[in-house]
Length: 101
Figure (cartoon, rainbow, N blue to C red):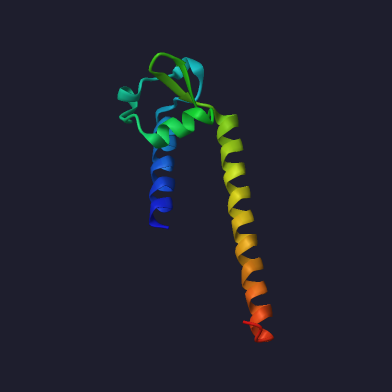
């Protein structure tokens, strides 16, 4: 659980660096050095999902539309996981009420 929290915090930190520096269009693309971001697995994941777009060697910007899609997909995954957990709790309570196990 702690690992997930660290990943979420570091992802948000990377995204905020782009937003705070105004690197949100192809014309404002910057190097990772200029943004004080190191190349990492989290950054690579954001690049693979086109949240952060590389327009030329080592120049990146944050793609706003894809960021919204990324957040929407993450919210959907969280809701599905919560739904499954609730369902499992209800099933467990149902079977425990009949002392079947």
